[in-house]
Length: 192
Image (tube, rainbow, N blue to C red; front, side, top):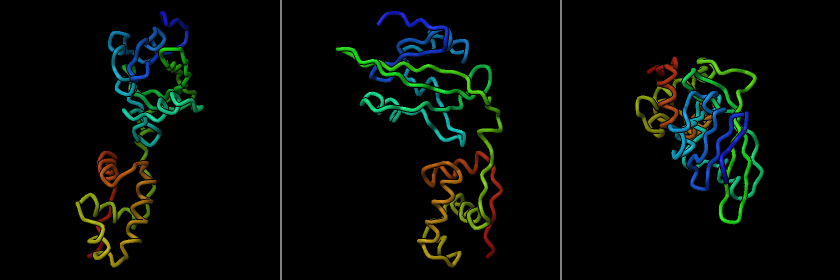
């Protein structure tokens, strides 16, 4: 494929997920030059996060994988830190299959609702019990010890932890602890 020309912000990746073309529209939108972007993995350049701050762009990108397998992929809203500050972007995915190579075009556009520093870092709403359990997780206490300390079953503690993970928009207890620290959440030490 030759030079990528469009008035819109569009970048092209190959099957290895490395950026092959980063057009002037992408440069205007992000402040990242083609020289800085081309040849690097797209997840490294975009470093997109969802509205809860969870990582969207990563090496095992399901968007690119599904697109390469021929599945339809919906547009994705991303929060990206650009040279101009945080922006909320919409990323589309277009797959072009040629005889020897599969290419993916990603048009980028700024979303109607701009990202603010607070939109990604909005503190979640957790119950008092969830704040207590998260406090104990931050302290490094294991689930069975939390259950004994709060006189709850381990199943109940695990149910609370699942609710905490959903509320924080994360996938593991380690991520929950990191997110709680990053947001400086007001946690509650359980009564003795």
